[in-house]
Length: 98
Image 1: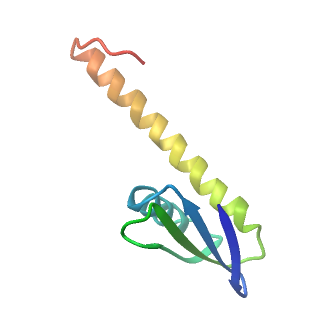
Image 2 (image 1 turned 90 degrees about the vertical axis):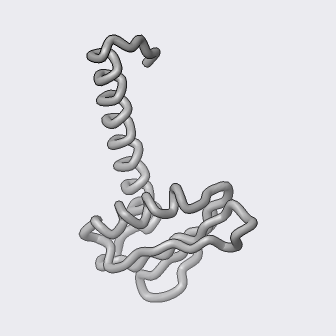
C-alpha cells in the first residue's frame, strides 16, 4: 500500500491486488465515518488489480488510522454475517464446518 498526501487533509491510498470488491466496501464505510468529508475509489487500470482510494478528512487525523478503522469494521461485519449464515444452515439441518 502506498499513501500520498494530495492536499489539505486529502490523501490517496494505492492498494495493490484489489479491485471493485474492496474499493466499494471501503468507500461505503469511509463515507459513513464522521471524520471523513468525502471518499471514493477508482481502478488504476481495468487490466490491473490496483485501486486508488481517495479520502478527505474533516479533522486532523492519521489517514492510515481512518482507513484501518474502516477495514476493521468490514472484517467485523463480515464475521457477523458468516456466523448468521452458518447458524441458518445448522437450523435447516445442513452440516457446515465453521
